[in-house]
Amino acid sequence: MIQIQFSDKIVSYATFVNDIAASIVKQLKESREDPVMLSQRKAYSVFGRSNVDRWRKKGLITPHKRPGKVEYSTTELRRCQSRQQDYFP
Image 1 (cartoon, rainbow, N blue to C red):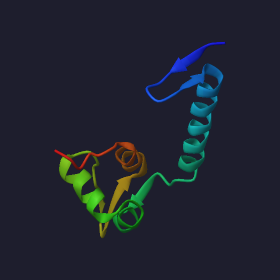
Image 2 (cartoon, rainbow, N blue to C red):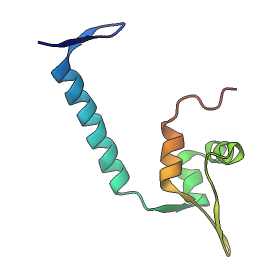
Image 3 (cartoon, rainbow, N blue to C red):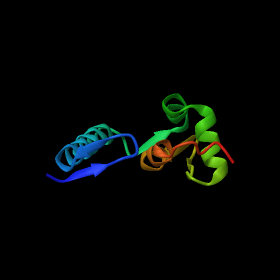
């Protein structure tokens, strides 16, 4: 049996792969229901205004402007959301 050693525990390879697969399936289910674009108001309510504004200032997301509407790509927003501690310098 193949085992993988982490700093806090040892797990079997099968357990590791199953956990990774479960995580991927969960993320796919969540993203399948996402629209391609979110309005700025919806992005603020889902991801938090300060987060969206910070990501925009850093150039991590690109606003798409239409007459009377600002939209963001859901994919870009999810990618920024998955990054950890991007608010520290």
